Length: 258
Image (tube, rainbow, N blue to C red; front, side, top):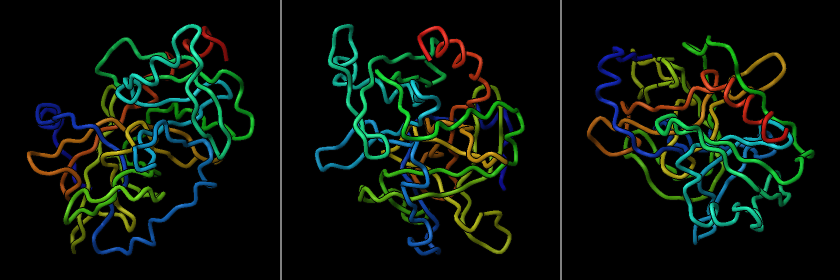
């Protein structure tokens, strides 16, 4: 797997909101199709006018979910969670639940936010936080509904289909995890289901396998297009590094009601 030097990566990174699933052009789309029932704690925050899910989030405890801060800037969400407001309705594993509070990390650059449910969500198992700092070289799995495309042609349509791709963490630095979208080739390090997120599912998770099941290691945040279109081979993706913010998440969820 390609690795950018630290200084070059930081200097070159241009934040472009990310998510969705972009796949290899030489692997059948059917190989990436996922079952939502395998990831019941992952849900969409909004729907487009065409009814497609937009912006993802993940249940991390009965009362809380995590997402990207830039996904919480929609006026309809902020108005609904004001004191005395009706709450913001989302669907989690097929059931309507209400979000009644948004907590954004004080460092705007972190791009991390918490969503509080008005009542405990007990019909799905929360995804625990990945707390270790061993992310480098780990395979991450990214589920999402956003815009579809492939590494050869870039971002395409928003078909609303649930897909799951994987990648390998190239760099774990500070509050960020990075990986590159490698294309196929004789010397390529691309995984069989190599992919990245793209427009449409920012806030969605990067999951790592543990003996007890999935843990959330990252939150979809942005992409360095390296001066070209989104979604092409060679772009570098950036996820919020959950382990770097685990203590803040613990403090906020405890102080504001678990």
